[in-house]
Length: 219
Image (cartoon, rainbow, N blue to C red):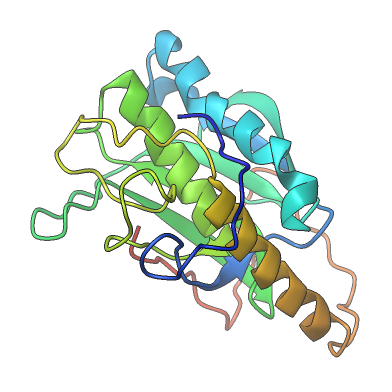
C-alpha cells in the first residue's frame, strides 16, 4: 500500500491513528541510512529501502522536513550523528509477536542521535521486510504502536502472522497528521531548550559513555 494522503479530519487516536510520544529526529535533519550487507540477501535491498522514499514523500506534509539518504552497506552498525542502520538481530517475542524493534540513542531531550532498525531472522518475506522498515521509521517520527487501529489505517499496526504482509509500505494520512502534531509540540519545546554544546562523534565508533540510556521501545 502506497502512502495515503487523503483527508485526516476523521482520524481518531487508537482507532485510525497511532498515539505519538516517542523520540524523534531533529527537524530538518538528513539521515544517513546504512544496511549491514551480510545480514540480508542482495535481492532484499530494494525492499528494505522502499519505505525511505515513502517517508521522504511526506516530509514537508508532516512538518518534520526530515529526509533519508541511503549511503550503502556496512559491516556493522554505525554510531554517528543522524545515522540509521538496518540489521538483523534476535527480537521475536512469541507472546507479543514482536519481530522488529528500533534501538535508539539520544543525547538530548528526546531527540534521536542515532538509531538501529533490528529485524528478526524469522522475517524473510521481501514484502514483510518493507512493512517492517516502514513501521520502525514511524517510531523514529514519534509514533507508537497501534495494534487496536483498523487495518490499513496506519503503518503502526502489527503483523498477524510471521511473513504475512500487513500491506503497509508507508505512512497513511492519519500517520502524517499525528507526526505533524508531534513536531508542532516538539517545535514549541525546542524554543525553550538551551542550545547544545558542540560535540564530535566519529562514524563507526561506539558512543562515549553517557547517562542517557539506550531506549528499546516495543515495536
